[in-house]
Image (cartoon, rainbow, N blue to C red; front, top):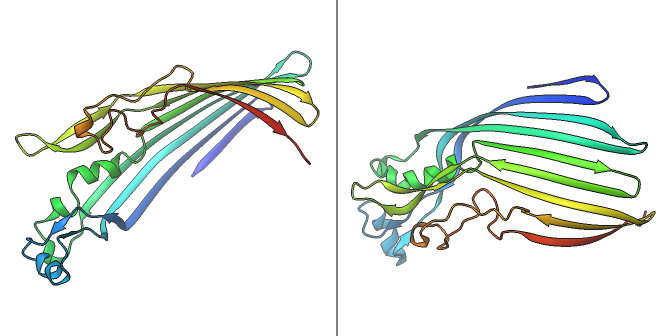
Length: 236
């Protein structure tokens, strides 16, 4: 459900809310080994030591809101500046874990707290985008800031009490910038920089991370700042 507010030609605001319920959501289980009393008797005849499988593990509910505001400004005789701000808030809720009678009591192996944390953090709780786009007849420039909320992802290691150790990824803001020059009517040269401030995700002990590295691309990439050049040609 949403609404659009546009009082004049220089400002617009859209607000959208959503709710999504998924029944019997398909997810991947943890490992079941051949020494399991129930599962083992199915694996041993196949000479399989361990197995995991896709299953309709649980019901989930998601809700959130999207807000986008845009302001259009005149810059000189033929220039225009578009300022856009967007914000998204998102929350996921997990229902009861669905198992068969033979797997009752094995919920932690079937769909562990660690695996649950990956579903809960499949998208940040909030994200915002602030973009400035300047357009001139022979020149254009763009500057963008993107912010992500913090994430709490459980590692595969457990503490002395059996609780999964948290990897906290702090909130981050990255920025991108580019400038373009019109060389000919159908040709434009663009210089740009992604991750202008050279921002990295939170650093963690590689032994606790999913990929075995000190950085993981859970909110954004971990390649740091890089520059690029583009030649854009319009053939139509």
